[in-house]
Image (cartoon, rainbow, N blue to C red; front, side):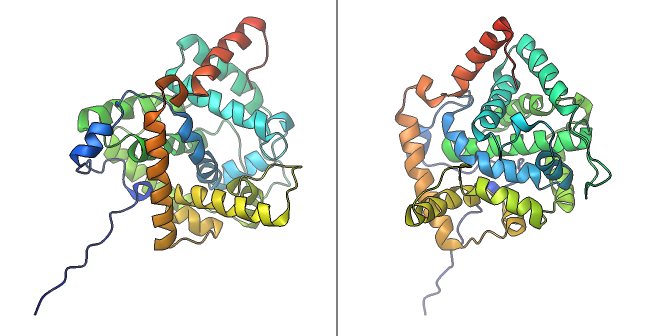
Length: 303
């Protein structure tokens, strides 16, 4: 009697620990892989809504953003401006000069000075809370690793360690001191698991985040059928980039069939991304760094 072995599909990249050993890649995959020094790529923007959800899953961050007095930077009121600020921060933190980082830090500090809870707030928060800033930086770093694994490929131990050290700037470009960043990738995984105990998305934050997850733009009304199609497509991408814990908090359904659809879509996008010229792959982050210099030179606000 023949014995059939059940082959379990690999764990999705978003569920893998940071310190997970590199998976074996076929010769074809290695031959088509981009370099480990590729830097930020425009395709990473697909994971933006998922990363926002992860960050705001900490109640202090969620309510800090929802109740922010800095209306010009609110994603629900000014999504384009908020997106530009966030993407510029990523570009500056990962590839900016010291002068750009200092200028952006000062601009962020001025905005953060207005973000703190009141007696009426259901959650106490302060934008200068280093623990919350560390969480935001950790979410950005984890999202970057997921993007690299999906669109570029596996990192060997040396490149992974270098990437981890460089990833520290995602937190330290705020106010987080370098000694708060977990010592190594294993320590980061322990920090991440411990921090999940503090994750909670209540109804108010969930209602705030759902339009972001679905890629809706405030003030834009589409025919119902078209809106449903766009919602389904955007939710597939957003939910696919979320670890299961955050899907559960957002009450976003997921199953093996949706995972297969997501994986097929990422395969197509990875191929298209690989065929584009480097300067196109890195848009808009390469342009945003130029824009930072222009804003500093002309005295225009950075955030």
